[in-house]
Image 1 (cartoon, rainbow, N blue to C red):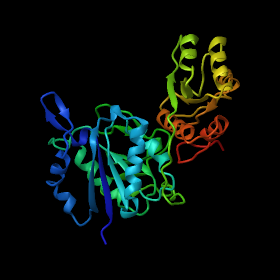
Image 2 (tube, rainbow, N blue to C red):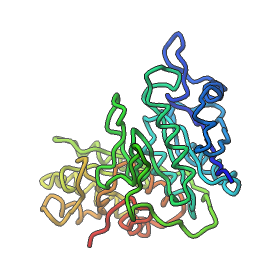
Image 3 (cartoon, rainbow, N blue to C red):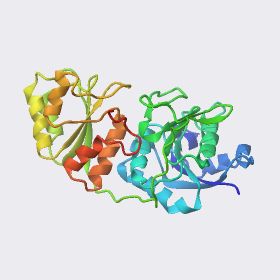
Amino acid sequence: MSRKVLLAHTGGTIGMRRGPRGYEPQAGYLAELLSRMPELADPSMPEVELVEFEPLLDSADNRPADWLRMAREVAARYDAIDGVVLLHGTDTMAYSASALAFLLEGLGKPVVLTGSQVPLAEVRSDARENLVASLQLAARADLHEVCVYFSGRLLRGCRATKVSASGFDAFDSPNEAPLGHVGIDIALRPGAPRPPQPGPLRVPELADVTVAALRLFPGIDARFVRHVLQEPLRGLVLETYGAGNAPSRDPELLDALAEATARGVVIVNTTQCLRGRVDMRGYATGAALLDAGVVSGADMTPEAALCKLIYLLGSGHAPDQVASLMQRDLRGELTPFD
């Protein structure tokens, strides 16, 4: 029996057509393009059910409500399909992949996000290969998690980040090797895919919470940081230097952070470096953050840390619970300390 994959077109470059002002989405256009793809009729391909979002989204406009919409679309059709491919714009794909990894509680089937740097309608495009490989990956019975597929590599969704605005190898997973590669064969890294979560699939209701991300820079003004930390902020991803370091000779900055954590704002320390992890006990400049109540984001991407904060705070966890869970691996998003 042929396996069945839901192909959910949320928007993005892959399904756009050229208009008078550049590439733009158009309802129904992707279905027209797919009807002219002989690859989809090949016996090696799964049966495809196409669903198109209305309206189609430019991923730069995505909000947490859109992540919930995607998750609920998956949940609504979950029992009738073997896997999902979400066509998505590349700008915020890493955020959506991370969010879905947390929101799809009890996931036991593959959910693969993909897109392209050049539309499917163009002669020289990465869209066709990304689409075909993603459909084949989503039909596998040995994948049970949210992934990003791009340019021959399958990445864990909550580890992916966009690294190129123009190259076909637009995504990487700096702190974890790819789950698999697609070349002549599709090869998954032995032991890499996560086991299925205990079902059934659930999508939680999320309260609307205010979180933010702040990147440190030399000379950052404590007054600006204090302004960012004002209510109604509930959580902050603080992107620091190196192994999790911040200015230690600015007592006003450290006081602002300490006052915020004391009133229940969860501040998570992630590194600005593409690779490596936060260790706030390695340097005095990191220990100062620890003393201020900041928690380690280990080797999470900033995208994963932000989405995890939204998920945990929106699910109703108390600040101390959120701080503890931010330091625990829930979906493969971080590497725990030995």
